[in-house]
Image 1 (cartoon, helix red, strand yellow):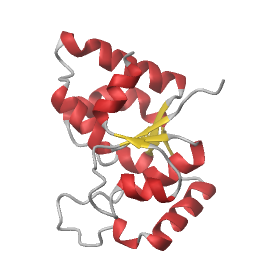
Image 2 (cartoon, rainbow, N blue to C red):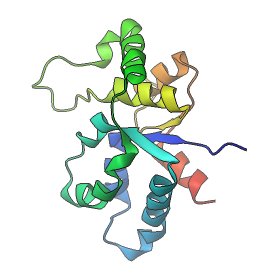
Image 3 (cartoon, rainbow, N blue to C red):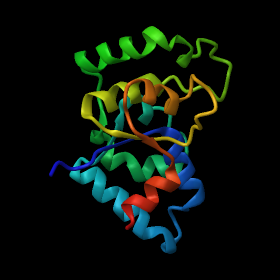
Image 4 (tube, helix red, strand yellow):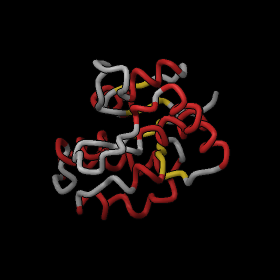
Length: 153
């Protein structure tokens, strides 16, 4: 049986750091499990997502797993082109918008390449959010709470 691979979005990592404080021992099993998954290669992301992480504690914790943030290959770049072909609004060209995440098409493209389930805290409310675009590409997606519940069984 193939291992399930998850591609995690910056929003989910940031939310995890906020809700499951890295420094509190009560949440250590969650962070140990994430570390184990990074080591096994069952938790990945795009290098573009790594660049979106700004929380100092989270960045420090995740540095040893930077290799799990996949660099852009030619096939991932082709996937990005395909994702953006029909979803150009996924990229925000206005650099003054603080909530914009231009890593989204790279996350989706990486998930396509690695047949991964996308973990994001974006909702399905908009056609330009990650879950809606995943659906267009027959990719499964889940939110952070669903992901934590699944991996901590």
